[in-house]
Length: 228
Image (cartoon, rainbow, N blue to C red; front, top):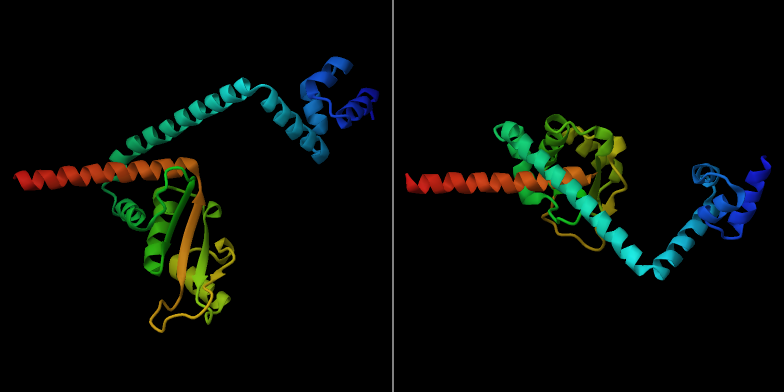
């Protein structure tokens, strides 16, 4: 091992920052970052130094937080602008309409969340939403996961096989099922409830914008009908 690398590791273990080590050994920070990138103990030191710097320079921390907020705000606006451009060509597609309407009724619509999630007990509803994601939006199946909410007397592999065949979601995409604890009613859903999930801030912003645009479209259409 290079002598300066050995010295760099010794200084880092003493809690020195990249800047301090770079000045002492005349080694570029990029080289130090490469040397320490796979060292978990170095990451602990990095986090500790970052926390200390944040406490020592609260104005700097506030400036960083503001810059990050503005950067992400601009990114979210870019996603929404994309949704507006796409809406013109998608709004008359029946499968697009089905997906948006399903999400309007059953989807997770919290604006602060980056999760696109829809839950339903009807396999056909889940199948339609899955087709909306994969066929209309071109989402790769590997990015989509699902999980089941089951009653205590239901057998997990049996239910997963049923939902997989009914929806087109592969068994590999199903995560660990959750069982309802305690008793259950006699009149209930035979196959439990399926939740389909994608973690994507870009998709969440687009879906929420499409909901807004379609609601405006429907209001405009309804107003036109009342004035005719």
